[in-house]
Image (cartoon, rainbow, N blue to C red; front, side):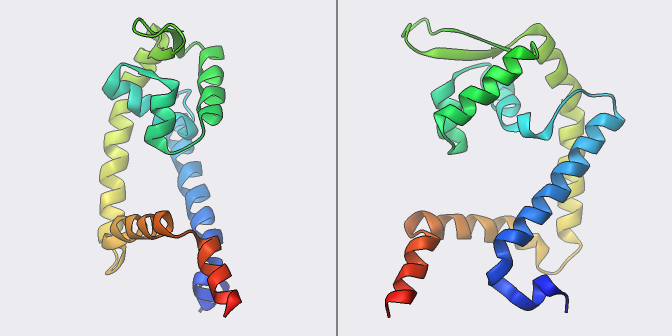
Length: 161
């Protein structure tokens, strides 16, 4: 049994981070191997725009359950690269809406086949293990549990006993 396995839930965050870093590094390697100037961290915004065409920064932040500030910074970075543009909303001039530029739209179309291949590869990987096929369901259950009571609250309750 390796170090991580021996400590069980005590190092779950570290294992998930390590798994995520490995996954994202490979995804970025795939993009680079296919001469796609794309970073895995852009995926959520690109995916939402590929489906919605025009959305507010608030909408993206709410969909991803991250801060408005974090999305605003990511959108600004994508703007600097010429991949997205922001304009005032037609309905509410105080709101900014985000859309692809022509360059961003072209990149999105080029990475779509990679996303499809990635999905298939990940589904195959999940089927290789007895338990891994339930991985996404288990993650969703943990997220739901944490939404009802944070890890902080749970640990504090144990320390108060």
